[in-house]
Length: 148
Image: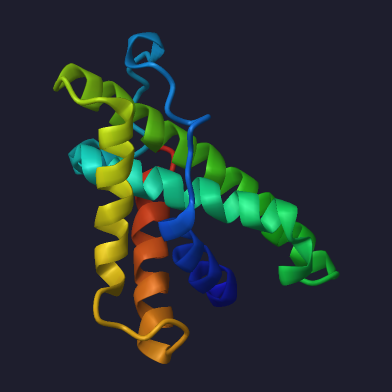
């Protein structure tokens, strides 16, 4: 999974999400995904939401990354589940941003920029890059976890 985390984190900077940036007036305030999401800021929610949805897109469009085993099928299911939580976080961020008078693109850009700061000054593909990617992914997964 660290391989996908590293690839997705690298691609996150280059990703765009015009389809994700729906007009703010059509977004309802969803319930918090978890206690961690309830205390997270709008920027963190937007960034983690995008990150988790990007992971799923990469795993779906490039299944060879996961391999061709039964554990790869479990990986696909995991990324689908993570993407669902990511969508919830992203929708929360958009609704919060709209309430603050921010445009969807401003919320999206701030979220992506905040995720990329985790990799400042680190060589892509190196061990520290992988460790930071896993820490960021873990934090985002915790935020996206359903409330018990």
